[in-house]
Length: 489
Image 1 (tube, rainbow, N blue to C red):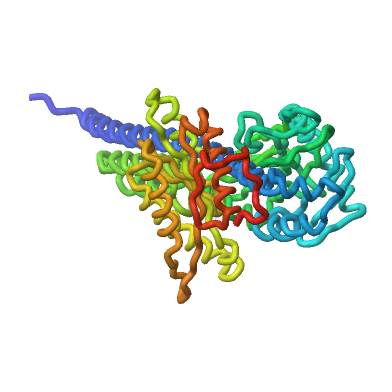
Image 2 (cartoon, rainbow, N blue to C red):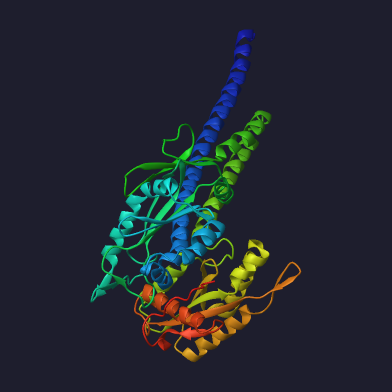
């Protein structure tokens, strides 16, 4: 009988421990590799989502600012105020009150066709001299582009000119915009020619241009940060350094590049924090470790997808009322028109009456309560007949399908106005607002989406001009576009 050699037994036991050690090392290495890949993948998804969110944010800011500005530039009353010299009293209200107080516009200027600075407002005061010339010199290229846009878009006859398309939502935009530094501060700059929106006409020659500047203030940056889950949001003309997200915004006029950057909350930090303690505690339980890694990875992917879903939702909905926004409404209307179904549909432009006094008396929190309550009431009246969207401010728009019976549609408008007029409770107060409605039908009143909205908007102006609190049909307008009234709120 042969004796077993001790070295063989040692070698066998050592091989088992070596194999186990190799297995543990392989498990650790593979786990670390998986964590690294998962982190990079999640970081990539989060980075792409953040870029889309920031791009969408910039586009929304430009759309909002141009819309606010058009309340003054696309208005017969503004044309009248510059026809025979500048009516400074008329421009005091928008340039010194609306712009800085409600829209975050800290500086604005009225420029004549021959590049003369007629008015320059800084916050709540008109400022002339060096400050005015400095602002004008930094925005003259935009002014000239806006004047060029006007000359290209205008139509006319017998020496009288006007712009037919919506200067904000038409196929070709009337305004010129840029992100640039004004006196050392970055912000949005928009220049827009003053044109009539009704029956008035402009004489031959260049147009007056209104320039507005909304800076990236600390408060506005804080809003961007909270809404989009970003940190360190900044705007600079120097390329960012380090591990930060950024997009380049190139000026269409100067070709200068502005860098909008931020610090993303990357999911990879969570991966390492969550997985490493579990990995250290479960070296003897490889199966459980892999289960935890998989669970962490799945959770991070879910967070990223939820963030993307949230960004997609915000891109098509109004964050205050949760109604569809203008983009979603335009798509729905265009889809209805392109469907080939020639059955009539109706567009309702709805504007609140007496809303500005509510804001002035009780503040913006009350205004938000009113807007949410009104949105719910309008949506309840429209119901399954169509859709309701908020355009911004106190403006809403609705699309009604199967709108052949015009009397029935007008009855819906009356019900809508009656519902809006009911009291709204804010804290211990009863707040009241009203509504005016303009109605247009496709294809009876207009053949395109833009024109049927325009027709409904003109009918809305007529409803306000007749005393508000009523609905007016576009086919009741007798002499073309209705002049805009002096108060839109």
